[in-house]
Every structure is written in structure tokens, then in C-alpha cells.
Length: 122
Image 1 (cartoon, rainbow, N blue to C red):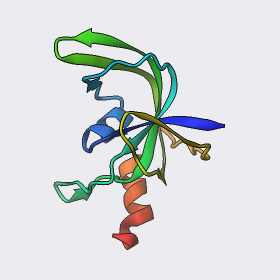
Image 2 (image 1 turned 90 degrees about the vertical axis):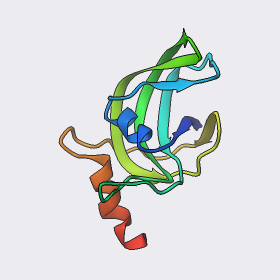
Image 3 (image 1 turned 45 degrees about the horizontal axis):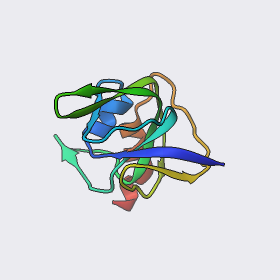
Image 4 (image 1 turned 135 degrees about the vertical axis):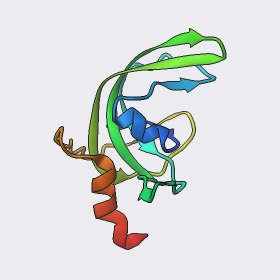
């Protein structure tokens, strides 16, 4: 089995993981279903916080797209943060072999978990 993924740059990837950002793309897709949100590999630091990079951070339900002026708004529902898992991102929607997804509790934060897991590797 495979899983579908989408790479998004930080800080937007984390905003999607928090359910606070809608993704916009210049291209449309007919894909609907579970989509793993991956933060791209570029290291981003904002106000001293290192944002997750090179990892999967959330799972969303992709329910469709909507045409907007300069592209397409991607409609995500049922957003859930996961324990960050290393994933080599790619362009467009891509597939990876099945990975075990560990969902975070509502009071946990993927940014803090990433910092705890990978701070010694930075």
C-alpha cells in the first residue's frame, strides 16, 4: 500500500497542521482522500523556534478544490497533527510506502515534539 503526500513550505505547513491555513496552488487535482502534509526540507526559524522540516507533520482529508482568481483553493477537513516522521518531499501530490502514523493528543504540538525529537541532530 502507499500513502499520498503533499509538501508545503514552512510556516504554512504548520498552519495547515493547526487547521489555520488553506492551501492554494496554481494547479488543480481530482485527488480526494487522506493526504499527509509534509514540511519541506528548508530550515525555518521564527522568533527562535525551529519549525519542523523534512518531516510529515499532519494528516488531512482532501475533499476537493475550488477555482479562485489565480489558481485553486484546496479544501482540507479533519486535520490531525502527527508525531513528525522523516519524509523526503517532492513536488505535486506524491506517494510513499505506508508509514505508521501516530496521532498527537489535542494538547500536544507537532512543533514542540519535533524540537524534542530532533534538537540534538540540528
